[in-house]
Image (cartoon, rainbow, N blue to C red; front, side, top):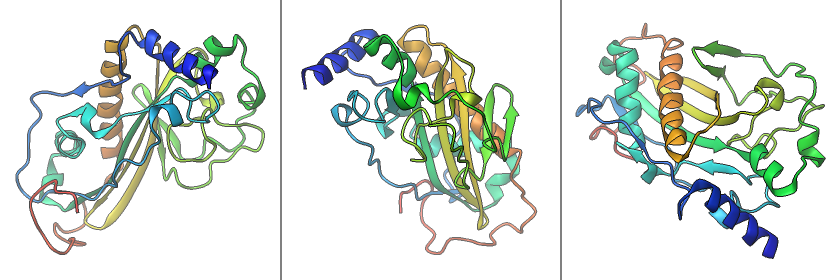
Length: 251
């Protein structure tokens, strides 16, 4: 327990603040008042700091989940505005937001600081990529994965994080050494057609503010990249979600 407390204090000390929040602010985004987007994303169930991000014995150690109160405007409004900016015609279609989760993975850096060396399953993270790169494409500065829930397993490589937890983990073989990684999960329907994406944005932070700025850039690029894969050929209103209601309301 002393070691856990020490590591938690160390993380807080390195962040230069009493909490680990990285508030992402995008002022000036257009707000849509119609039923263009319906928010059906699930509530936050990520473990608390001492059970996950701050616990060196957890596979979530060094992986920060961006909570809903770290987004201004709220995630669903941010998603609606950014998607419409990249794909203006989408506002005439029915969009259901299923998932929009962002993780800041600085696990390798913290394990190095905490232990002086990286071993065990983390040491095994540098291996052959196998078929890990299936359905992967590069968009600007991010790696974007389509259909990420399909098996992307490499038996010779453990992920940096919880293996196949579909959270903030990634394969080290896909990332440039020395970088932290922002992992974004995005899932939504357009006129009943499902779209799922996972993205990796790698960077080297320079202070707490740089993390929030990198997260904002990762979100913009992820949604812009996802928009390139969306087809608007279906008639507007097909696959319409029953019940109607105001925009961006959690159901």
